[in-house]
Length: 215
Ligand SMILES: NC(=O)c1ccc[n+]([C@@H]2O[C@H](COP(=O)([O-])OP(=O)(O)OC[C@H]3O[C@@H](n4cnc5c(N)ncnc54)[C@H](OP(=O)(O)O)[C@@H]3O)[C@@H](O)[C@H]2O)c1
Image (cartoon, rainbow, N blue to C red; front, side):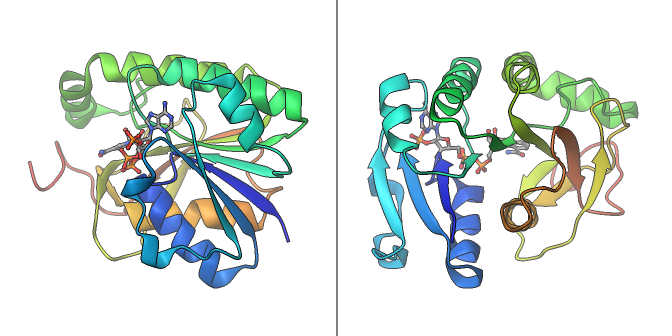
């Protein structure tokens, strides 16, 4: 049995991952988040889940929350995500935890080719710079990280994805379901030696286009 700390635990991908982890494993989960009212109380398993209220940019709150955790899965967001990344690295280092799964975004390495790449840059603008700075904090650390860069996220009830491995590898496709990303996170938690210090893109196969289908 492992203890997994999930940061941003009421995030949309995180909630799907939590459901899978409760169903398919016997891991204990630490749900670290700012707004516990955003959790679905009916789905919480009090025996295996502990809710810890805190902000990922607050070192003391995060350090306390990581007590006993073997793996950290960060499903964070926001314009201060670089500060959050620095806090996560520092708290993990000081707790002696090595394994981190970090959700980022397509496009942070200018790795999305063609018209879609340009469209993505135009729409996402400074978000990409901010998310890149956070990813650099993670990849410059000595943690056993996996950075996941999902394509544009959908809420489709499907698990259907492929990977592009490496920050410099041309990104494929335009979209991927949150459920697919959650499944990949859960697979990494279950096989924590996979994709160590890797940076991977996730997309739904055969969705190459100039922009996501719903735009
Ligand atoms: N939308 C897309 O198409 C797309 C594509 C690729 C990547 N992404 C990125 O993928 C990530 C995960 O996606 P998602 O759909 O699961 O996002 P989400 O639902 O917005 O989840 C992000 C979570 O981060 C939490 N958070 C933000 N700042 C925090 C802090 N300082 N301390 C603790 N928690 C904090 C938020 O909680 P609060 O309720 O407290 O704000 C929220 O629950 C996001 O970073 C998103 O930008 C999105």
